[in-house]
Length: 193
Image (cartoon, rainbow, N blue to C red):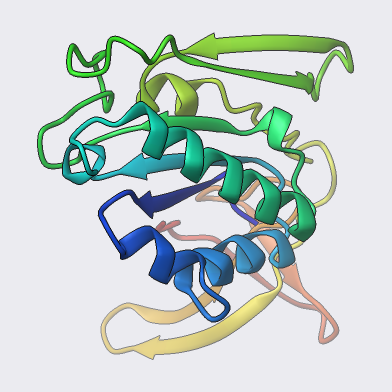
């Protein structure tokens, strides 16, 4: 699964309400992310410039409270989720802190560090900082190569191209790999992502 999900919630009048309603996409996407095994989440409260009034702290707080309640039901701990008021159109709080929301003092998350297992607290203001604060999950690169195949293409002039996802281990050009259960071996010519 992905290292993190960024759930974008629209703050515009009526838009948030539609997304969080019984069959809304906000609910659906949060549930999908959790069901697919995505353990970390960031919530971007977008179009905060279109809120009534623009850049409304009350609207931010209302959305944060409502989304926190829902993602908690799904299985996420809201204390580990950064909620960032943003405007993709204007660029507020995307990469640099916005001057349009002096009330927003930033986000803070509490979590257990995946490597050290110690409790830690992280904070920032922007969506980029929230993404940079993601705890990268351990990759089992020291284990044997396991690459379940999803498809195999036969491409003229290139050859046979197996397609899949590396679950454990490492694959690189020049390696000799063995396909189970047949025991067929071949050399890796190139790797595309």
